[in-house]
Image (tube, rainbow, N blue to C red; front, side, top):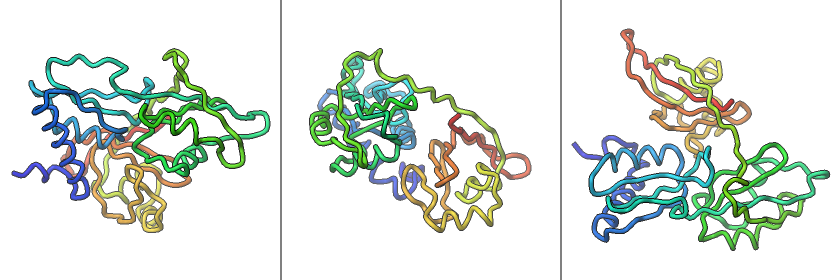
Length: 258
């Protein structure tokens, strides 16, 4: 059985990349640090690395509750430290009395300066303060170039002390449900209390993303750790798949941000 049979066709290039990272660690006997990975990508890494004697992996996103994290693959002798993940945290200074910032505006501003999505992690907020987590290798570039978000002028100040990083409560509400299939339309319908006839046009209209990519096929098959977002309705994560019930349905656990 080919290793690729466990993954979607569009995930095969990432599988190849993970295997190459593993090969580098094995042959050169040194750690290999990746860019920021989403939950599904981290699941793929864990399944390919597993609990092996020669190569291990660990994840860190610069904040305790980070959703996007860098992965460090390392040989058995190596003991990773926080600094090995090479992340930088910036707090955003802006005229908060006159301007209201939103997560999506900051995300857009980071993309507009030419920063690739895999080079920055979470955007943290307590409602008024905002912090952005970036890869250390692009920290200077971000600090110099991110000077505005929308019409608001901003400046970035490095957060050097870990205790000053915002602790954002990311408690997840878990809900176990049964669905007729692992199709995208079936799970979107169940997650947001819709009929499948109403979920289908949302997907076909490009309003649904899986792992931050627009998926317009209602029959798209979901897997563990997939993050599903529906514009205007929120998002959830397929936390686990417990298999089939006696009636042939799928018992799954969905995670919803509180």
